[in-house]
Amino acid sequence: MKRKLNILAGDTALWVIFILLSGISLVAVYSTIGLSANTIMDSTPMHAFFRHMGFVVATYIVIIIMSHINFRYFSRPSLWLFCLSIVLLVMVLVFDDQRRWLDLPYMPRFQPSEIAKVVLLVFTARNIALSRDRLEETNTLYLLLLPVVIITLLVAPSNLSTGILIFLSCYLLLYFGGINKQMWWRGMAIFGAIAVVAFVLFYFVGDKVDLFRTSTWGHRLQSWLHPNPNELTQENMARMAVARGGLFFHNGIGTTIHGRLMTQAHNDFIFAIIIEETGSLVGAFIFALYAWFYFRCIRIATRCQVLFGSLAVAGIGTMIFLQAVIHMCVALGVMPVTGQTLPFISYGGTAYLFMGLGIGVIQAVAADNKRQARQKMTSGENVLNNTVAQ
Image (cartoon, rainbow, N blue to C red; front, top):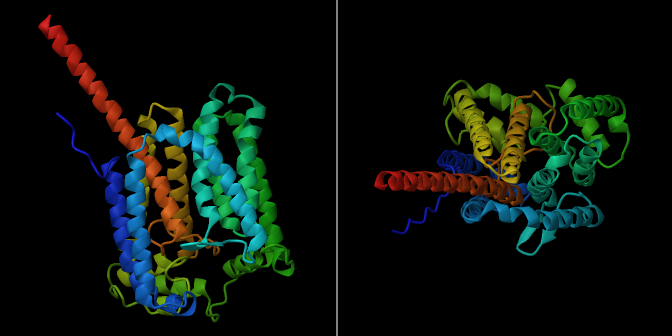
C-alpha cells in the first residue's frame, strides 16, 4: 500500500512554530509598515504588505520543496554556492555605494549576505564532516576557519553585526563538530580580546574615522552607552514603545504610536512594537517560540546519524536563535543597534526567503530521521514475524 505524500514533511513542532511566527509577522507588519512604505519604499502600505505576504507564501513553498529532498544532496552544491556567495559579495562592494544590496531582475535590493549566512553554515558542516578524522590537528582548525574568515571579511565592512553573527555561528559549529577543545577555547580567547579592543576603539575614535562604516558603529555605541532621552532616535522610541506596552494587551493591535514615527518599525525594531501593542507576556511568548525552535533543532541534530546533516541543523538553528536574541536585546535596549531583523517576523524580502531556505534544510534532515526510524521499525517487525513463523 502506497504511503500518502505528507506535504508538510519534517518535524511537526517546527511547522507549528513557523506557522505561529509567520502569522505574528503578518499582523505586526500590517500594523507597522505605513511610514516606511510611504517614505522609503515609495509605495502604499497595502502594496508593501501584500509584497511581504508574497515573500511569506514563497518561503512556505521553498520549505516544502526543500523538506522533500534528501539532505545529502545539499553537501556538494554548497561548495559552488559558497563560491557564488563570494562573487556576489564582491559585486556588492564594487557596485553598491551602501555595500549591502544588488538590484537583480524580479528581486531588487537583493542581499548576498543573507544567502551567504545559510550557505556558509552548510558548507562548514560539509567541511567538518570531510575532516572528521583530522579534527585534533591544528592545521584542520585553520583550514576550516579560512572560508568563514573570507565571508566574514566581505560582509563585515558593510554590515558588522551580520559578519559577527556569521563568524560566531560557524565558530560554535566547530565546537559542535568535535574540534580540539583546547584549540577552540584558545581561539575564543583571542577573538574575545580582539572584540574588546575593537569595542574600545569604536567608542573613542569610531565616530571620528570615516572608514567603511566605523563612524556609524562608533555613534551607535556611544548612543547606547550615553543615551540622550531628549533625542528622537529609533532606539529611544523603541524603548518608549516597550515601556508603553504594559503586561498583556494593554493597548491592542494596531494602536502603536511609536511605530508610526519609526522608519524601521517593520524591520529592526518590530519586537518593540509588538510589545507596545500586545504586552510583555506576548514578547515572552515569542522568545519561548524561538527557544522551542532551537530545542527542536538540537533534538533533530542529535537524532541524525549523518554528521553532515547533524551539523547543518545545529549550525542553522544556532544562527537563527542568536539572531532572534540579538534583535530582542536591541529592542529592549540591552545592546546597541545592530540592524538585525527578527527571523520570520520582520518585513520579508531576501532575508525572509533565505532564512526559509535554512528551515528547509532542517526539515529535510528531520524528514530523513523519520524515514530512518520507520525503516528500522519495519525491519524489526519483519525479523519478529520471521522468528515467529519459524
